Length: 256
Image (cartoon, rainbow, N blue to C red; front, top):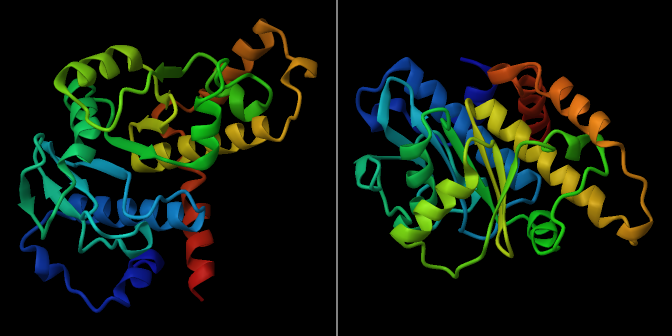
């Protein structure tokens, strides 16, 4: 048993409660639950709202998502709910926030590379999303998204089919988006990459908010921003993998 699996074993639950699942699904559940717990520790949660979803390995039409009504700090590998593309429950005990899964389901359906979709109402992300110029290349962290950040206008709580289509069009093939007056969104090829991207995006937004006068800042040249973006993306789908064990240790150290 790994250290991180032992961390979740305090809940005195057995994998038997989920019936027969693959080793790959088991690992995805552990990683996704870790992602939720880390997000709670980072104070990115918003009560029982917002979600992180992940494709079940080997089952491209099945996804894992949090049970609606639980705070991020309460999520475990055992209470994650397995759903289909419409949010219908395949395994686990609901309820699932269908309107919340609308964003995730639409992206998963349109983007086979988006194996983990991470949507937050984080304060820094909301604040920068409400600024007319959006995220500016003021830091190395922000330059990771120099050519990889979309914007989507706020259209209220309900996510209609037409807005789903607009969101997908606005997102394109980018890994991240700021949802205006709403929050942040990242799409990872893996769960570790999604967490790494959200951590980087949140830090970039926080740095920007600490600058009191955006008209008096020094901007790197476009060529430097492009070069830095290319350098930061050199790992491709492996992005975030080397950092993931360190983030796991960060969570474990808070437990001991």
